[in-house]
Image (tube, rainbow, N blue to C red; front, side, top):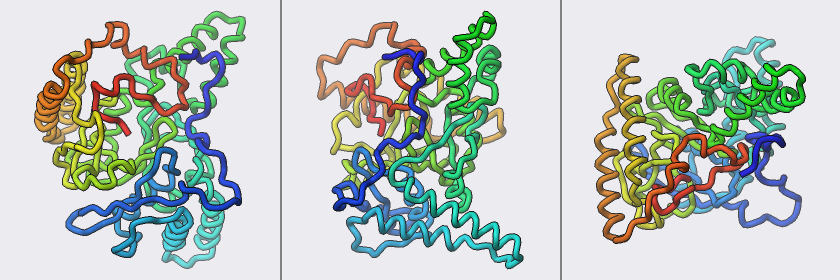
Length: 381
């Protein structure tokens, strides 16, 4: 990995170059997966590896809310068709109040959002603040989420129990923090230099862009049944909260034929997750290598600690503790048994040095995280 001496790419910066005016490329077409959602046959749009995830994350929310309908035989959709549907949804947000001020404001918002629309299919610039799960620097890109009333979340928060980090990071955005690190490194004042080092260490140790405090806050802040967009490592996912747990919509085209794989649980910062069907019951995906692999013991222990904390958090907030915990434990047991059958000689556990949370540092913060031990883990999309 590299150190952060050179600032990493800005999270959310376009992952793809803007499309030229040449002939349509293969990626301009997306496969439609039909699922049963709340009793209705509902389409979701899947993506190949580098699909325009901001566009798909937003469109899948509109499809799951039945605000956009597709013909029942639709199997493939183009980026242009998706844009047209999205444009119609934005125009439909016109306020009922006909007062001149509101109408002018609406027209300005429409104009702004239409300027942003093309970026949705290449990559959005979003700049997180580390103070809260809904805290982003306000950029023109945010207008689309506002107009459609779709919450945008992240989980990259500074831990309030680390006063040094709180002091070093403050209310700065990601871009401002990178600038601060560079400035502090060149300062003659030793206290500024050390504050810069603390800030740099924070970025390195949280390069996965999801902290444990962030996950807890995300779970607490998202409303039950709410559909939103979750941003992490240049990737935008459709997220829902169901019975106190967070799930991300599985949009990988590799699961196109897997009707039983619709959601993926988001309950751990290290990528440990389980696939669920449309009703959030655990599913096993035969179609993809590694989806039913077991977790090493130390990861199980850490996961149990994480989940115990989550239960304590929900009790403290006066909520019922999440009911899926025992299901998740059962899933791990089943996954472990299945793994043992297929792998009579399991891989040795990683060296202790790999277990330290700080080891996620060193990757460039803007990259999508690569799985460290793919055959010992559930697949993280």
